[in-house]
Image (tube, rainbow, N blue to C red; front, top):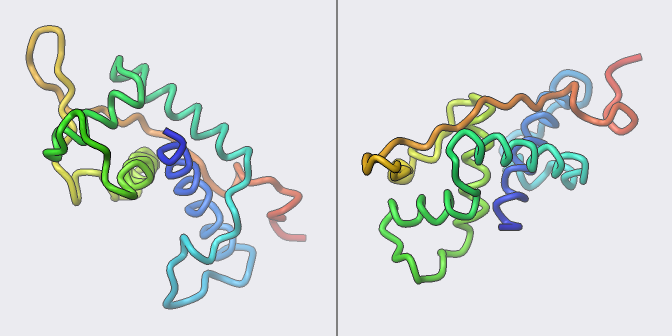
Length: 146
């Protein structure tokens, strides 16, 4: 699950950092992978990832591990097999981007995650809205002007 949490936190941080550097810094470097050039994800952003996971679990009445394994099953990955390399991180990244309403969704490149209800019907995963932006960055490391 660590990779899922890191994927969520990294998406939150890099999105906010990119906005910050465009507004107050030197801008994001052209022609590069922004995930690679952004600074290391600060630990306080991991706490925000856990907050988001709590909201996601509460809204879907399922823990994050079960949600991720359900996503894997929906993608055709057998229940008892290992997940492909990068799956957990990508899952976390896509959930975070969808939560921030960036237009990126898990379903863009994967099958929809369907959660089996007690009634027996399948319901699409509900991703709660979550805001993490420039104002959530540590002002000591990311000053906002003079």
